[in-house]
Image (cartoon, rainbow, N blue to C red):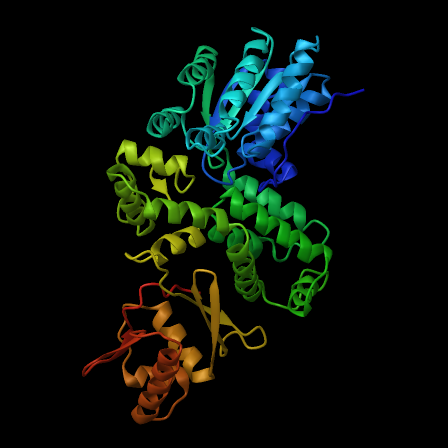
Length: 471
């Protein structure tokens, strides 16, 4: 009978099947056939650390290895599991391969005295298990959100006098003496854009391929390949294709993805992007929003400087932050190094917008997007306003829609009244002024100021609203 890993489970943000496409090189490098016995891999929230570790554990169990998987976020449940496993080994059971997930979370809980009544016991039993991992043939893999150097900084900053310092030193001596290979999780390091296309194409295999490029580009631009966002997009695309529990709007996507497309691919791409953005704001963006908020509010000069570097990267001002700040941002999974240019990049438009939408006082400024009406995408639509989790829409008349699309598509251009007459079909300067005044009034009623600017004696252009983005 194949042994089953002992796992303290938690919800995994990255699905195992998709993870095999995201990290094929790592699974090959760390798998049973590789012969690797010690590895410490780390990376930011929702990059797939826990799922990668669990996948490796189950793959090893399928090859009849004896596995013990410890979930560092299990809190007090860890104590019971460790006691049972240590007792079994003392009774003569074989020592298992050890997979320790979220070691940073476990140590943080212990050192912050959140588990003060069991902390010493947890470390004592954990040290016993570590001592029993067979040297030279037993596997010992660890995952962490923090790199080894930042994990060490965390330990020394949070030490509690109530915790037995000898047990902590013993724990780290086991870890340090094992000579782990340290691996930063980097889903962008291995043909990520090509693999993203493969993942999209698989989900469209039962439908028409007419929308493949629209789907691929929309998902690429929204997610930037970040697993937290990418996997949610792929799941939603799969749901639309298979027709699982769709509401009336989603049924329109399902019909469009059928054998007889009714929408132009470009129109479909705009509508799909809007739909996926709504999904991601409520799902995959949440852990990244937490990372962004924590960094924004963190204390200490290095973390404050890292936040400023992140904002500059999101603005496209500085593509090469100093090494120490770069390490912090890489650990958080909020930037990656482009293989093409060598520059450091914030992944995807949603993460960029989230960073730039946090004002100096920590509150969200509104981010705006034009969403065309599927029945008349060139002349009607609505303005979508986002602030954090809040989402509002403003219906736009035909003249308002045409005016806003002109200003957004060419934000630096000053349009004369005559040019605006030509584009809108209005018949006089007075009619143009009236249409713009109605537009400004409607936007102001929605809490938006300075969206349209009157350049005296010349005409009109897009105003100073910093988060108006092109369609």
